[in-house]
Image 1 (tube, protein in one colour):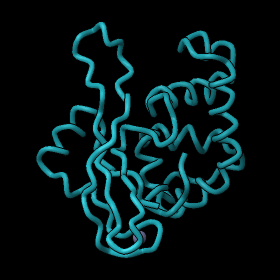
Image 2 (spheres, protein in one colour):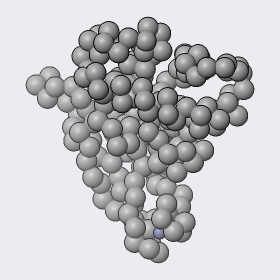
Image 3 (cartoon, protein in one colour):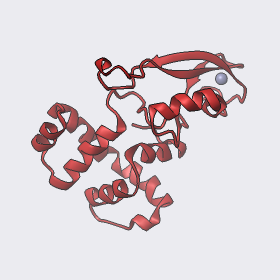
Image 4 (cartoon, protein in one colour):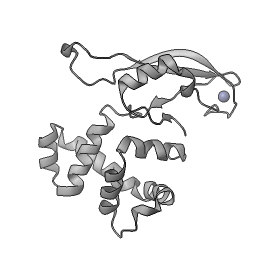
Length: 180
Ligand SMILES: [Zn+2]
């Protein structure tokens, strides 16, 4: 899919990169028709900075550059690695919740410790569990050194010890897997 621009790990880095190298956000091909010429088409904004606005240094609204295909006129955009597509919570918080569940397996303890609603944590867990076979297939072919395990939690423990969840998702996105 290539909807994620990998290696951009913070909102500050995203804003600086937009100023200095905006071209890295431009998709190589239109996701709708495959045409290779896309025009810059303004920006839309995301409230990706979850810190309270009262702190004063809140970065919202975060601009996300948009592109329009010169052939089919479909518009599209790519997100920096630090902003998850279609999800409100940061990758980092999702990773903390998943790693907590992978080590202690307590939905209640995890939701209390991170101040999250239990249903949210359960949804992330179910998402990981139900997508594991696809994710694991692509990740293992890239990182055979992560070894073979018969069960899926040990695989994710190894994976998330080696790489942040945001980078794992960027790798899968580059391989054409739909994330999250
Ligand atoms: Zn197109």
